[in-house]
Image 1: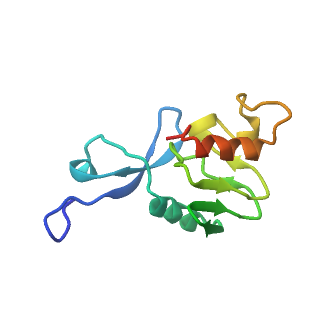
Image 2: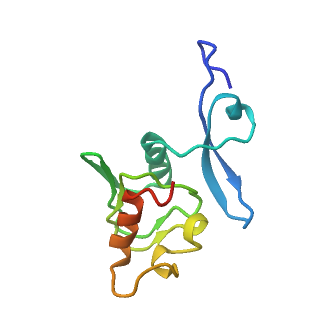
Length: 128
């Protein structure tokens, strides 16, 4: 895609992965026209997804805090950048990253709050 100034634009889209689950992606430059490069979402693009799905969030300094009252279904995302913090009441569905709700992921450590562990892992860049 070409912008008004002849520069390439980024495009937010969705695809279906190998496991049949859909996911959001961001393509830029020539890739926005259909070639294969996919990059991590920016904070603004992540906000777009939250707003599209109707989830509540707050911006606290450098953090984007998801504060929805219920489950947050982000099963289609293949990356989560540092600076995202989940403070919602229910599950965090991350199908493309861990295969279901985060608390059911086998990588969780018994006795450690799963949401605190998820937030710690995001802060360390595990999902990018």
